Image (cartoon, rainbow, N blue to C red; front, side, top):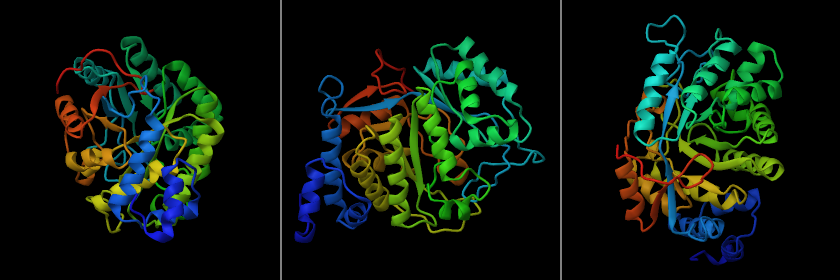
Length: 369
């Protein structure tokens, strides 16, 4: 295991698959990177040992989907975001049904099984607009899962439409919504959220949306955007809140962390590099002992670090990302097709398999993109 003598007991605890405390997580964070990675890889193997008929240790998954941003109009003005526009700006937009049909047709042609649909907090779109959009997609593309509307969007809907969250989430589900992404998580510590996005949903709001979704038997993901104004204690508090929620409701299918991308944003903060990204992902695998899947963020880190992250606790390489508009506005423009995804996974000694949103393996072979 390679730990220093003073950490031997803690390292053995991790190696054995036991739950660690927040204080222990902070202590682990200072381990040499390769040693922390080895512990995370051990925890990945323990977590996946019984998956896919016992082949989980050898399988790394990916999904073919498309990120569709239905509008860039937003009234919360997050300092870390370069994507949002006001209604008056010339490049603001709201997607049309014809445009979304074309995007989903292209996704299906590439073997896609899902769209990830998120947008800004548009102050004038009404509830029926969203329900009609969902119903249209479900009717025309019944084979596509709609993974859409982050918790912060649902809090926006609650406030604008003046309806209870459970009513909204149920109505959206009945119209075609299949699952909810973890966007807008950032750091689930209000002290941090008030500094980077004071008009956005706070931590309890984000968690309430997820708890209701889980109650309604909807799967969701959890995320973290780090490397800006927070510290390691804030990050561990974030992980702790996700873990407690998972203990209570069990609906998180995966956890995805990525680093703050600074270009074209108003948030002035030092960004962090690959070393700290790998360190945080490894710690996430160890601490989140009840979240089955950890996804590598190649979109922000690049293909090579995304690949290396498979040895730091990740068992999933995420999406080929046919389209991505948010982090690309902040200066990150990495691209990947199915052949690239398979090459990176197999290059690390794993078997590459396509999955759906629920981490079920997809039969057949996606078209190379």
